[in-house]
Image 1 (cartoon, helix red, strand yellow):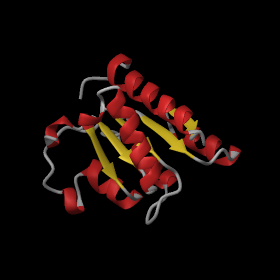
Image 2 (cartoon, helix red, strand yellow):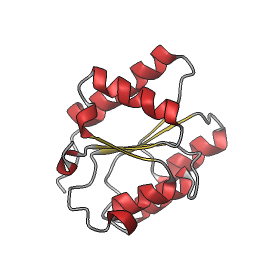
Image 3 (cartoon, rainbow, N blue to C red):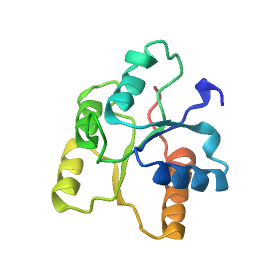
Amino acid sequence: MFDNAVEILLVEDNPDDEELAIHALQRRNLANAIHVVRDGAEALDYVFRTGAYAGRTNRRPKVILLDLKLPKVDGLEVLRRLKADPETRPIPVVVLTSSGEERDIVESYQLGVNSYIVKPVDFEQFTEAVQQLGFYWLLFNKPPLA
């Protein structure tokens, strides 16, 4: 994969969910444009080009698929920082999490999330949800020019 091709940033600490998401995107030929980070601190470093990603030169991702329950920095804090910065605010963020707690949903929308999806437990439903997310955000959504 070429670094300049990153269009989806998957922020996921669960290796099984990561594998399922990548598999689902591969089935729709969307996985060549994905980069995975496994905790909130790494997600922030990637997007803001700090830490291990200080030399990153590619454009920002077209969409971020964000889990909420993450090590180091939780997903809500990642979302808060992304939406607080004028340069990263336009990046669509889709929360893809196992948490269906009303307070997480409400806070996510208050912080500016674009969509909130509770991960289906069923493999086929999870695969279909991720495929539809990739299709919509990469092929149909019209983002502002960066």
